[in-house]
Image 1 (tube, rainbow, N blue to C red):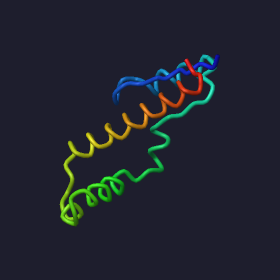
Image 2: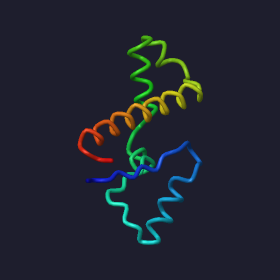
Image 3: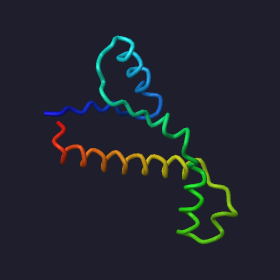
Image 4: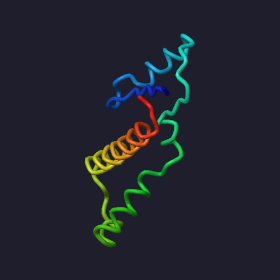
Length: 95
């Protein structure tokens, strides 16, 4: 039976530190995905502006987004992605 090891937690909780420690001890982790590495290639501000513009019209493009909105949107997106991936993995037989 395939296994899934998911290291999750809020920003600053030590996910990357723990993962780097496990790798340094040659503990097999299998496929390793780091959202921080993926985020380097995603323009979140562009996504937020286009999504907000579609929801509220052109005024969204003219206004500055608050940090609270950006943080909430990013967390909501990450949570939705994680839940979707978890369901896909469970359906594929991972435990």
